[in-house]
Image (cartoon, rainbow, N blue to C red; front, side, top):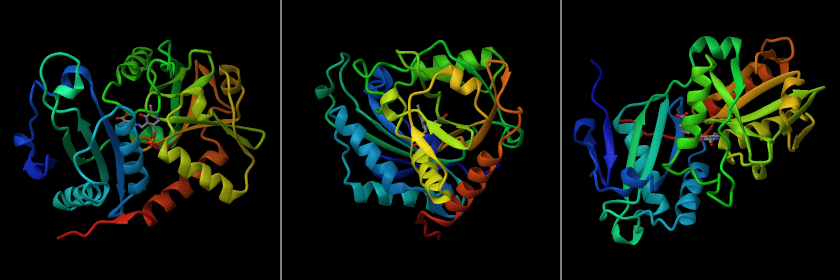
Length: 295
Ligand code: PXG
């Protein structure tokens, strides 16, 4: 049996069996809160500052005060990783609106709750990292930014979950979500890139894609390689006719997609540029980041 996890909950590390929140927490009642997913590679937290910046921005956008300073939360995150002795793993930061009365009013919730879970995550089977993913087009669309900004990593992921159900019911691994105009936006928890005639393209953030931190890292790697790149609107046709396709995300990392709506992408195998970026991303992830001091 592995050791029970130690969870950071409102200022204390507690065993997972004691890490409980109230049924009156608005995070549960209304999905009112924000979260982050962060990876630990080789004893270092990858792009911690960027993840925390995004978390604080998302909290600000929904008028949620995180009851800890940036530095305190940074310290709590690294301490939780160390307490669980994780060299490689996955951190879930969750900020809930906190306990309040029944009724939407968030101002009835005096204090937000802070949860830090350090554990592991496996998004796709290992075989898929070698052979690539099968994608479909999801009927469920990304929300219009006038309804809810797709930049907010909120605790309300129902539209992504509905899209994921569509993928799984179709016997596929993942799916492309379109925006309300019908342009490709992203996948259910990953950003999407295509390669055509040596040029790499990804939808702009304005297409409803999350400003993914793995996406940013991969864009930096593309620049280092000196490859042609553009953020531009793309349609399903562009993906059908691409030479290569790959997805990026903290949980997914960098992974090839080889089939889309039952059509092979390129020759149906992970492409050369995709494989190069996967190798370079692994190198970057394993050699940079905030070091964790273990006991
Ligand atoms: N798009 C969406 C909608 C996301 O939720 C990404 C893209 C990739 O962003 P990063 O910054 O991670 O490169 C995400 C983040 C999961 C899971 O369990 C997925 C994410 C976060 C947490 C959990 O599938 N994806």
